[in-house]
Length: 135
Picture 1 (tube, one colour):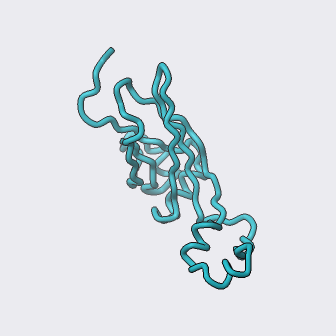
Picture 2 (cartoon, helix red, strand yellow):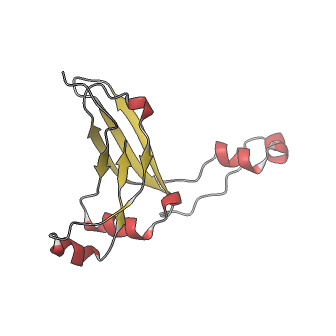
Picture 3 (cartoon, one colour):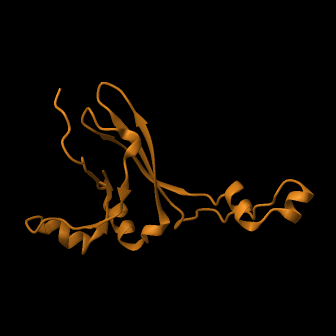
């Protein structure tokens, strides 16, 4: 068993060109990553990336159930109880080395580009796009 020295980082990049182009246009605040850690022989995280930038069906206005809730529930509570729908972009599993504490993982959305020698991809995409970095 090898022990882990320092932080472990994984970069999650979508495979489809459509997803890369969408990640070029969407704001970081519209993206959300949900993690479910799994301890197995190989520890890994199940990741679900979703956004509220795409709405396929207009959401129906959230109505609290009872008359008292409608009258006295503050708007922030209504939004928390009845969140707007989110569109799932992709799901993935990220494998980590043994010894990594999965519940402490953090994430960010840096702008990334292809290497200079990958000119075909750079021409197709046309610029930087967001990727999910898990550490």
